[in-house]
Length: 143
Length: 143
Image 1: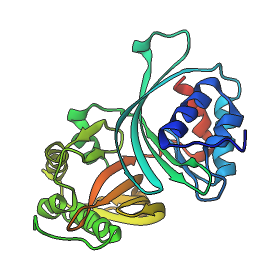
Image 2 (image 1 turned 135 degrees about the horizontal axis):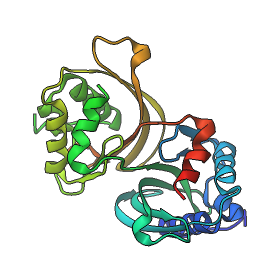
Image 3 (image 1 turned 30 degrees about the horizontal axis):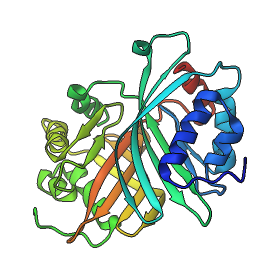
């Protein structure tokens, strides 16, 4: 599995969400780059840097949970050479809940191609806690 | 100001945080690309797409506020050709508060170079509401 290769950023993305929804640690590990240069921000959380910190977090997330339903939808993105940025909307819910009960997460996923394969280099996810109209109010609270 | 040009992603980034801390709408407008392809997620908020929606949000944020102190620090990033991704830590506080009282924001900034200049194409900001150790607990609450 560590040798799994991905021909496109889209293929990595599909594998990432497959790994998440199946709680498949081997596939999750294959999705990410190998080095200290990977970055992961879970919703509402701080920054994790490096493959081992990132994988430890997924191990914790998967531990003691039942596999969730994770749907994702590409929103927009940017690409050049060996680098691709894809903003996606994630809909995450327990398997026994209806789609309306899903948590909506916005994630910016950054993919980098090395000599052999595209890999996930950064996952920055956040929960839209307030709706669009009150974004400014939320930002004001920060100041 | 609309014709202002930036030679590097770093120059756009400096101008972006200058515009934020001075509440300078003209400079903020010059920083962003002109088209429908720009993306902005304020901390805890939903997605804004397109230059006019993004600028409207900054107008609201600046309206009725006094300019905050905004410090930023580059954490890590990725670049290829006309595309650059820079993860930064922002420290935002009212001018009359001490640095310890600053809100810490993590932001993934995406820059794209067009024919004339580098511009900000995406700003995805989030508040780390829980610390690293409890990231998994936070993620579990989503399922």
